[in-house]
Image 1 (cartoon, protein in one colour):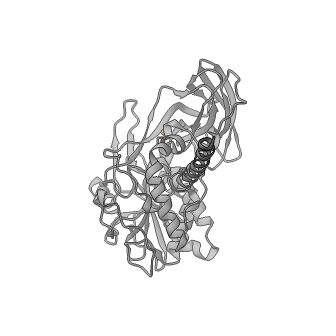
Image 2 (cartoon, rainbow over the protein chains, first blue to last red):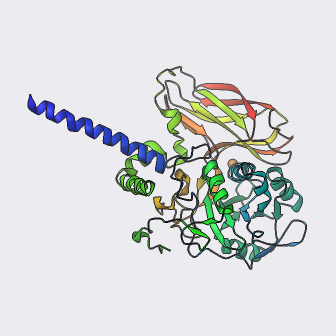
Image 3 (spheres, rainbow over the protein chains, first blue to last red):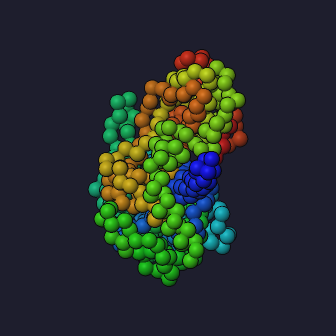
Length: 240
Length: 197
Ligand SMILES: [Cu+2]
């Protein structure tokens, strides 16, 4: 009899712990997709950064109207750069929609501080006109960037940490794969934050507000740093 | 700081539970389509035909591509979505597609301390991955499996109805009739709303 009673209490405790663990795991680990809520602590950026932050200050590419585009943001601003293609019906428009909404969620005075570039990784199909039409559908001030010089495009992508491959498909339509990340560049031309595909929309907007406020992730020199746990030594990634 | 400590605790707990969670709650592979919000037991739906809800289409312009998304809830028996048709004059072709991470070396573990809110799509593009890892692409699939009494979500970054070479603009607010063919199960007609996500 006593055994039964004493055993039932730990079991109840165990249940509570399991529920707590599940809840914590849910909050921290899930919430994927662009419809997910925002549940991480405010201290962290949702995007990640490479260390040291890649510099794209010397990278230029032609815009659709023929002028050379550099990628540093305006003073105090943030430049969002995306490598994509207009035939992409799923991943690219999801990210650009999120960008549109993130910008719209900013105080009006802050919106002009954010600029958006879409760099085509499929210039054979993305004419200047098509690309411009595509990006400005989402962001009226968005800049269409394209070059037919694959060596230039590849070098530029590499500077950001982006990659892509366009191969002839069986049905005649090219198969395209690409790094579906969004890059935030600061006014010094540094890629200060990177958002993988699947970042929650609210999280993107929140990160953007913080970047505009001058906050920077740990490992990126800036007016403010956010303490974070050091990197997992097993991955071999430097901590800062 | 207490939030920081909570975070450490959460990370520590996650370390212990990430494996079962990844399978049960997170749906690491979007092809499972298991969204926690819609899989939480729906004993009411035992009809034999699959049920299609929340159908929507992304706006698009003539000459371009777009996609249609929806949630499919299986009936008493497992079935497969094998074909999707749109009214003639809408697009040159319509296919079932799946978007996935297709780069090599995409098994890099996402570090939770990077503070991400991302779901399952990020293994390859997370902080520890190489530059070439984690590229995303889409490919045609013959069918989308719908388990008995299970739910499959067609959503950005996963399964989608690929609509190629639109013959006309699709503008937000429009309705788009969609005919789905299941095997077994026959056809199901739904109306997708054209809207931004
Ligand atoms: Cu597709």
